[in-house]
Amino acid sequence: MSPIAITVLAFALMLFGILAGGWVQGRLPAGHLSSSSKEVVKLSMGVMGTLAALVLGLLVASAQGSYAARQSEIKQLTAYVILLDLLMDQYGKDAESARVA
Image (spheres, helix red, strand yellow):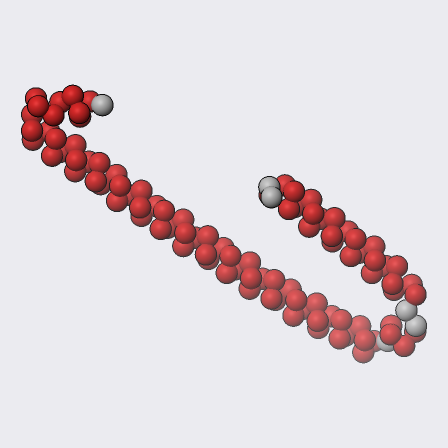
């Protein structure tokens, strides 16, 4: 799934949640709209936000680790190519055609 499709899907789900919440709020009994109920919802949303931040932080850390590993592999491969070029240079004219290619 492309990143744009995921973004559009996430936006649509959030918009649906907002609209559904507004619809449900108008139909709730007065007892469910008390200040203590609102505090529980606020606390729950704070926990959900914290968990989402932790998950996103882990994803970013994982991506950074993967990037660092690939960067290290590229540096090692580059070092091998330079070493091969130097070794072929020592062979002189016999290895010139392979060095050029």
